[in-house]
Length: 81
Image (tube, rainbow, N blue to C red; front, side):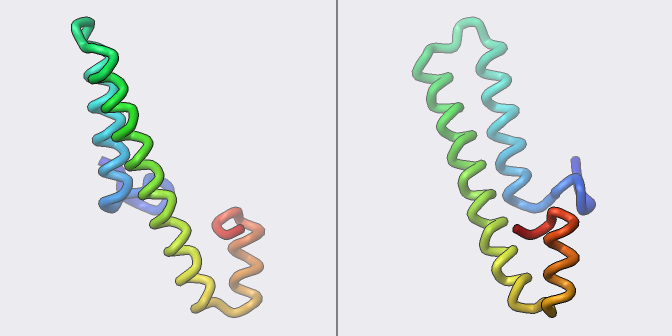
């Protein structure tokens, strides 16, 4: 699912959503061990870190293409820092 600007989309979001669902599924399994839960939690954290890194790199690339005015507008909208 997802897609669109606000909804995300793309491979990184999909990886985060998949890792989140796998963690939820593991938590729903009352027979899941602490090690299994821990592994799924680590997978989610890794997916989020990769998505954050991709976002940071994309923002840097975008800034290189913008005029000062365009960058300022995106900062006021919360799109860029």
